[in-house]
Amino acid sequence: MAAEDSGALPHRSLLALIWTCFGVAALLVGLRTITRLKFTVRRLTAEDYCMFAALAALLTLCVLETIQLPSLYHITAVLTGSIPLSLELITNTEDYLRLEFAIIILFWTVLWCVKASFLALYFKLFRELALYRRVWYLLASFTILAYGGCVITLCVSCGEITNFFKFNQCAKPEYIWASNLSVYYSTAIDVFTDLCSG
Image (cartoon, rainbow, N blue to C red; front, side):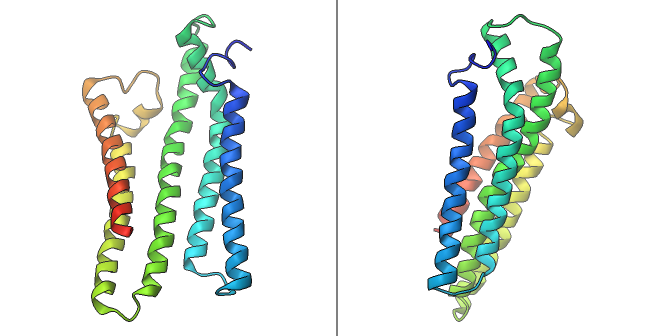
């Protein structure tokens, strides 16, 4: 029980927050779909499928976060001194890292599926405008490459990819620098592609 209450937010509260956020997202996608089917286009289009893909990635992310939480709270409890240091820390840390790698990629997938939905909408809007259509192809290509860059910078941020899943293998200064670069790149490219799409 000490481990579950060791963070700033208790385990059950964080779990409730995760699933409430997913519930709100699912409700919004559901309402959007119903509105489109009943009142507007009356059929599903590419942007709808992109939103469904984003929701599926978000669901998977929430499931993995739910599985990851016990490891996170165990690590936090050891760091705060709520429970004693033991070999279980290594196992929990490696479990946490395996799940975190997938969670990060799923998070980017959610964001990029939403961007793809906007791009699919713009594709239809610019159908008759040759100049805008060329800009659209450029932006779509850049967005796909940017997503690939996020995944690649994460994969190489700890030397060999297998190091990412091992206890204390990413603590070298060059790996910390590469990890920070991955975060800065993914944040900057996310904001930049949002601005280009807006």
